[in-house]
Image: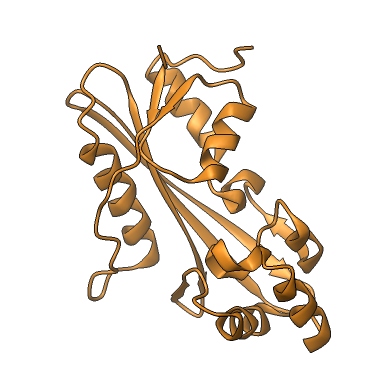
Length: 189
């Protein structure tokens, strides 16, 4: 039996938890992910993480809910809906810094722990040809902000300040501390 329920269908979150040896079961939940009027990016990811953890009806085992977003100029960049949108996002990120925010919540019964992590990412200055070539790989099409730092998009990044795994989709340093507090083992083989 799994030690932790992941209230997400994200392949990246699943891979990250498996990477540190957590025995998980996947139970995606369906919640409204619309940004509320005047809601900050921080409040948005924290709210969604909490709602995902609470929407899973598991009562015995801990449930992890999480959400991550890319923010530039106080605007949340979602997943691109077209290649043109991906090109526009990457052009906007080129040569600049942006933030990656994650909310993480673990709930077990009535106990709830919710945390927030921010990572600053700086892109290299990209040419239009580089952006178009990267978009042609189709990797950006299912990624917030139109890039995957764990894949081919790694070459777009000049530096990061903060958690690398947060940029991938789940801040493992924070998650490990939360797992400890819920007595969920990791480093299992």
